[in-house]
Length: 121
Image (cartoon, rainbow, N blue to C red):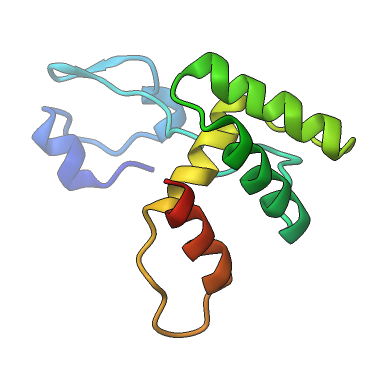
């Protein structure tokens, strides 16, 4: 249910369920359903081997545009047949590593991988 104070601010006096309100105009705004955020169902984590293959491909191609990132993805597929990543996914992962600050505690990504990606950048 929607809290009563939210409903009152929109000009409604009684409580109604959220399902009744979604898609309807309440006050001056249209109520929309909550966005589904997070990872897609069945998404795989980046393994150490995949990260190493990605860094090798980025080092050899040195991509600057969308087409070159797709080329990186294809090169990774040739080296690692289980590869299912798009060029955009490769770009996002590389930039995440390249612009990451040095971890102070225990890190999910090893410091050597971070330093290598910073060197390629």
